[in-house]
Length: 78
Figure 1 (cartoon, rainbow, N blue to C red):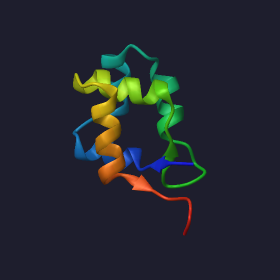
Figure 2: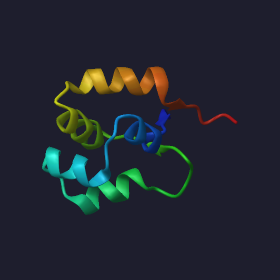
Figure 3: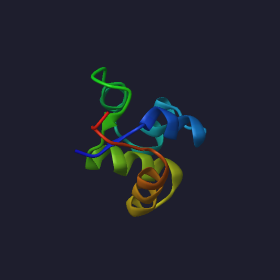
């Protein structure tokens, strides 16, 4: 399973969960729950989350995924 450090991505891109929710049209609670999972420092990413991040930055989903894979990827193996 691929895992990304979404919190670091948000910080580095001057994004907040509120802004991502507002700009993407997804509910704040939905985005907040997804981005603040407690099982690890990284969170799994689904298509809705990727779409929300892309809409909040006026980018294509592939551009967000490319950045996440290059800079914010965490492997499950520690």
